[in-house]
Image (cartoon, helix red, strand yellow):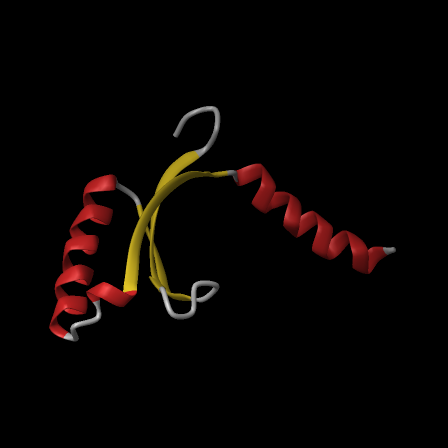
Length: 81
């Protein structure tokens, strides 16, 4: 973890015919785990002949612990008002 938070990797499988909809999104703790999943997902998509109608997208971001903890405050502070 660094000053920005914990680095995570996400992989989304998106249907090109329904671009606003994720088929599935997964989160991984390492880039290697994300890459391994991508290979497995592409293999499975190939078996259904669906690789041409889907995108497999990898991204990275930081978990912001303070942001998530502030959601707890926001949720229960509202009840107290």
